[in-house]
Structure formats: structure tokens, C-alpha cells
Length: 288
Image (cartoon, rainbow, N blue to C red; front, side):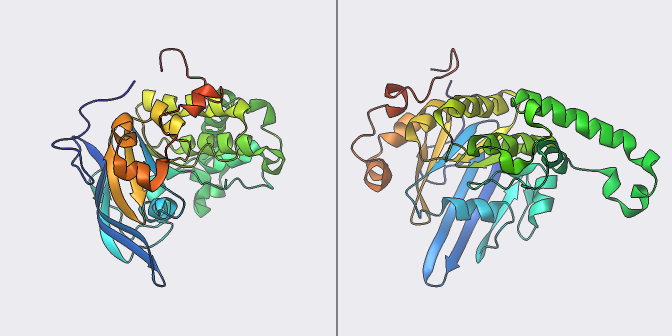
């Protein structure tokens, strides 16, 4: 399953990638006297699944927020698809094809599942004040958006819930809804912040398969995750943060054998594949 040839030269923090979709330089963010992020150089490979791991407080979510326009860095620059995103607001970042989900889901509780999905579509004609007055200018587009939303809801096994309020969904179903809504904008890069957090075992396998399918459909995936055994099974590349810095990166098995990573995060149990032992992760056929 693992991809090869993602990088050039010796593997080390900041190693250059063959075809990077994100390039970040000297990105830092401080809160008072605390340096939350201090990334000297990082490249994310295109067309691969990259996991961003590290202990609590390592700066992973803050780094996500900086890359997606939800927070402003003190220093640094970064590019997505060769275009600078520094100073670009979050909604414009999403319009350019870089979308994200959140550790705590952002479903709009008082809207239905279908209405939440429609909000994820871009280039909606009805959002223009002039065009909104004349239904013939936006009705066809609205029908196309709804058809796409229903197709995605069926794929994510949420179609029967389309008329339910998002507030009534379980934590796992909200994760599925947020991922499905992200796909409404036809993204190039999907960034998932702890997609498995708070998800019961019954939905874990479903989410796992959806993440793998994103790559099969040509998208790049960058995700934050604490379940190291899930990371080992689905990630092509792993980036490790600790105290705001990138301390290691490489193929999953190599990173998990790195002494600095073990000391910072994994602990002595890292050779035991708990995900498989407990039966929590059941890989799709051919993905082992």
C-alpha cells in the first residue's frame, strides 16, 4: 500500500518532496511566552496520505489552523499548488481546493444534514444578490448541488438521515457528515484533524475506508491522528511534531523505529499493533 519515491535525498525533517502540494517556510506562532509552532521547512507530498503526529500540545492543530487561514502566524510563508496562501482568509483557501475538517465537528446543528451538505458547495449562483432575485439564473445550479449532495450522502451512508437536524447525529455520524461536506467543493487537498477522535468502533472502519478512497480518487490527504496503529496502516508518509517543531518524518515503519520519536511520543508499546490485536481496525481486503 505504501507509496515510494515521495522524497529526494536523505530523509530528515524538512526533506524535499518530488512533487509537493504544500511548501511551508519559517512558520511560527506564539501565544504569550509559549511557542506553539516553529516549523523551519516542511513539504507535503502530492497524491499521498500524510499523517501529522505528536504528543498533546505539540502544535499540530495550531499548524493546521495557520495553513488553512483560521489563524495568523507571527512569521513565515507557505504555498499551496505553487500559490502563496499567506494572509488569505479561510473561505478563499477552501475555494482554491484546500479544505479541512475539525477535531470538534462544525456541523450546523439547526440545519438538516442535506442543508449542511449544500453549504459546502462552491460557486453557488444564488449567493449573488442580483441573481438571487431571478430563480431561472440559479435553479439549475441548485438542482445540480442537491444531486451531488445526495450522491455523497449515499456514499457515506447518511442518505436516510438527510432530513434530520445535524444536532441529532452521533459523534461518528458528524465526522462522516463533515468529511462528506468537504467533498462538495471538489478539493485537491483534504486536511482532517483527528478524524477518529470520539468515533465508536462501528464507524471507525467506515471512516478508514473513506480516507483511503480519497487518495484513490486523486486527492491528497493530510491528517492529524493519535491512533498510531491506524497511522501505520493507512499513511504513506508521517511527519512528527514535538514542542512546535518537526523532529522527524519518513515512511511509517521508519518513523516508528526512530528513537527520538519513541522518546517524544510512542512509548515502549509501539511494536504491538494494538489496533489489530483489539480488532478495532479491520483493513479493506488487500490493504494489509
